[in-house]
Image (cartoon, rainbow, N blue to C red; front, side, top):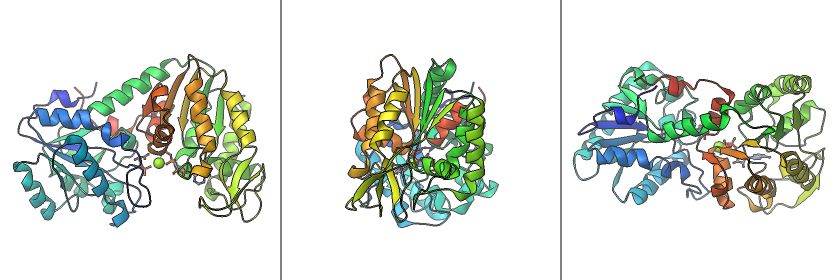
Length: 394
Ligand code: ADP
Ligand code: 3PG
Ligand code: MG
């Protein structure tokens, strides 16, 4: 059993909480789904009620180790202040003397601060001890409430636990409980649905899921790497060239294990990722100069049939670029199908997938909507997440 926030005396202490505020933003940098912020409120409020000063830290996007203004956490700080109805100090960075000065204001009326995007510094992802130590100087107790990032052995997730007493926040605890319960002895047929754009990150998961599930439905950008190795023309669709060997191995392994992998038979195709761009339905091949932006109507029907008798479903990764209305039909159909399944356990995970289900008003219809995408998949695969492993035992 790992320590949790309940195991510490927080009165008067500076509590450094890692959260996952990697929230979806629109072009004007408005937050389109604040579920990841809302989900941390129990931990933040608990710490405040116990008399702690709360210092939050997170990454947002993938700025690759340098400041990128569109990836500032400032929209998250504003939203958090609205939700907590209190002032939130927005720090200019995450380490260093200026940040120390800014955190000095925590002695006044404001009791919450949010550090700037951790990934503006290359040492966050490299997990250097010097950077983890510098982060640790911002607090006296470390709490991990960033379930969605706990599969990353980064400084704010893993390295920092070597410098401070550490434990889990309520969100981390809840996610582990829900996902653990759902997966303990999953009722069959057990179907996994994968899509989204983080193909390199998640394609390995497909291989490990073969041992656990009966069927895997693949849509989103994830599908094109598989279609390509099957010799299907995919036009300008997003693929990962260096993952073609792995995709081949996965298809072979699934065939040997008699696990069905269903790939799109047709696609909504456009010439540009632009909602004004004319579309046409093509499939399975995508013509030169066009790219796949959503699964097509035949695929929707095929996926619906494949899900009709499912008793356990996990879904990560939208079926198309759902942020643009004309490319959202596939994701909406999948969300509606899951919402309508009788007596099935449905677990949806991922910042964008959760946002997509919420946008269709269907979040309440799922058994569990996890804040973790890659993290929930790795947890469901049975992997030990580095962010959980690193926390102190009770
Ligand atoms: P999650 O956040 O749920 O873990 P990902 O981050 O892996 O999911 O992927 C979400 C993104 O995938 C969305 O922003 C969506 O626009 C994008 N996406 C889905 N289908 C495609 C596609 N065919 N081509 C490009 N991007 C896609
Ligand atoms: C996510 O959105 O899955 C988490 O915030 C982790 O982001 P990452 O894949 O960029 O590490
Ligand atoms: Mg995402």
